[in-house]
Length: 190
Ligand SMILES: Cc1cn([C@H]2C[C@H](O)[C@@H](COP(=O)(O)OP(=O)(O)O[C@H]3O[C@@H](C)C(=O)[C@@H](O)[C@H]3O)O2)c(=O)[nH]c1=O
Image (cartoon, protein in one colour):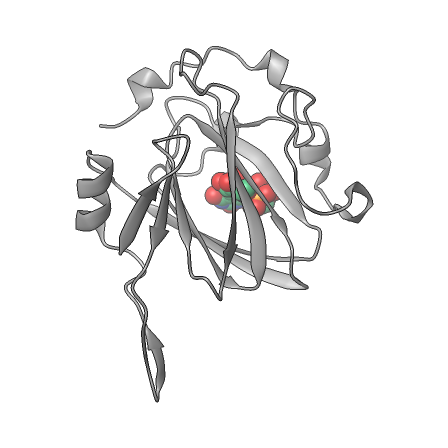
């Protein structure tokens, strides 16, 4: 597994080593030890999620409020997406910055999205199956988000606005300027 820091250093691209032969392919999709060594702290992934979406579906931008903040390790099993992580840690040198990357079943790249980031993705292929690990359990009471097309964030979602399909919830997410000063620091890692 190769790990690459992005321009937001805590956001890490993970590139598995893929072994191909006449039967197909094999790769280690997750190694707790290697990822912990690279990020420099323990990770306690406790919930795995999967969703399937069609072209233009945009899920996000989501995060859970303390004390249920979540780090995520995300990947694509089928299809292609643009994955986006926004730094919502007030006081961070990259507060309000975002990192985006294409993840696909073909390139097999994964993204480590730390706690204190809002996360979302849009589907670029006809369908996509998205799979991810979380290091905290789902807590609907702590579910929160930021509007995908917030004027301050100016995220390039790479597909025409008229093709986007969002949930009612995501169409009504608050704008970034209402982002509260959540205490992510004290909820970073156990
Ligand atoms: C996220 C989640 C949802 N649900 C339920 C709640 C709801 O009825 C249904 C669909 O929920 P949502 O609309 O929030 O699903 P979705 O929009 O796919 O939410 C996900 O989006 C991506 C971008 C993320 O980063 C994830 O952490 C998660 O927030 O599934 C759970 O039971 N457990 C979970 O962990």
